[in-house]
Length: 508
Image 1 (cartoon, rainbow, N blue to C red):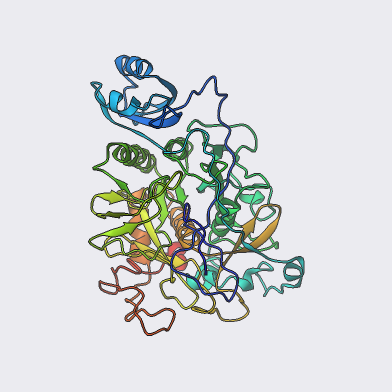
Image 2 (cartoon, rainbow, N blue to C red):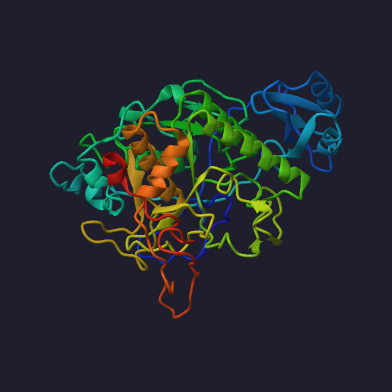
């Protein structure tokens, strides 16, 4: 099977019955609502092409006047400034902008957030989900007390969510923000639980609060809508059921029209969640254009610093940040990893990175819950990244039916979710595993409304069902080991503390 370019790889789309190669990547096209060019000049490649930058200064005091002056003198225009964390978003056409500004007193780091010009001209065919036909939806027969499509959701009993719903659906006082490609809040399974006040478009790096700005257009990726349904599709006699069907879900759109999740948008997303009472954020993406950001590179170091500050601030304000581990079957605990796709917005080149110095962000940032994927047989999904000390927990993300076939009445080894336009369909990936954990975290917060993020995470890990290493791991049955799991039953590289448990989340 041929993989699309893994620009965004937290989800992948696999026709039923087709084998999965190691690393399929599906992700997003989204809409940006950037300010007019006159207000937002851009930043620069070596030939003076406009680029975007982040400039990091001491947080909590606002950008110093002399730094603002230096930014202007270096040919930069400030788009917005997140003073609480000291991150300034700048556009400039000066190819020496970052180097010049890094020498300014009070600037701790600065770097280009992209290698392609503003706006990006690159596009990639990222595939489409397998959409349920009208006859499949109409012909679905629900068991008593279930939504019509719930029988197709093998993933709910895999984490005991079906049993949890008999006790609690979660609290409407809890909101999970889907930081992603946008959410279609008009979907009949999402509309009852949508939190408009916590929704926004952050694509430009600056919040756009116009009505519906958080939605994907008809030509854009359904990824964020799928994720939102997995978390909180309402238990309303329509379609499917989310892991936490009684909580609220919001859409924070951070992916641009070409499917890139740039640093300034991700920073904006975390800051918006922090300031709008969000309890959990779901992050099923990596921050472009670098799969791994290496701190010995001054540009990439600045990106790590900016997103770290934003995600840490969101946690300090009460949010539990949950992120997908990725779909390349990488061992994050290896001595080195070959990254063939960075930078993914211009011309990638193969590089060998040290996982101790180079980070997949936000997945590997401090405090973030890193989620690996499992299939219908409870084994690590063939594509899921792993690594002892990096993966915190596992949850259903789907896999090829050829590898892990679900029990009837489910028919697909992928994960059912909501799609824009009132539809439902299948996707797979760690993108789908992460929202299961976000949903369980929301149930924990519902049960313990005053719990801190640290306590929610502690309960999430303590309640997880310890899952022993799969050894040997030969998922395709060809006689060759496809990945090596290390660690004990309750803390290993494939499953972390274990498989998420929704029933414990509402009863303990």
